[in-house]
Length: 239
Image (cartoon, rainbow, N blue to C red; front, side, top):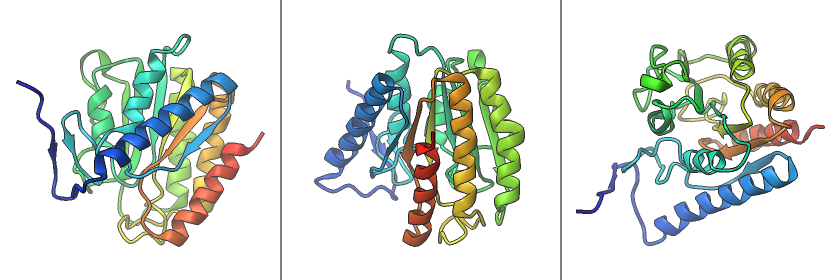
């Protein structure tokens, strides 16, 4: 009997949904290969997003867990023994956490609003079995802004990346914590997203030959999304 695939009510399916989701994964894997070959940073602008997708369930506008596919592919490449995923979407990436929570070769760290959709991401969720200690969740109250985000990055995320010393860093780059976003209920500015990206790039310079692969996740106010992406890309592009 074959595996069944489920989807939630927030994932309506059209005739082109499979092709779009597959194209997002394919584009990401192409970017990952280019990043490895050229030792450069890459930003993938694709829809649908991916970090809510579970192993056999689509949810939260996500069909395939794109960043998990990239992490798995990268682990199969020579010299890539440790992958760090940093998710700063306003929603916790339940799918990504669940796919890697029992492993110690892929570290998943998330900053997100909590309690909030999808209901996961409490601070005591730190991984299971062999992967215990290789999941980190930093929950924020609604209305949190730049200061708390930047402090968490400086005091926690950077230290965690330095301790893990990854061969590559992946970003679930959701910008729905932006102050204009209608779904997030947070107060983060585009400038803060740029500063967060700068700190990640500095970590990549120390540990992964500068390699960062960033994937667009959430972001539902077009003006706030455009401004945040511009800051993010400028920071990724900095020498």
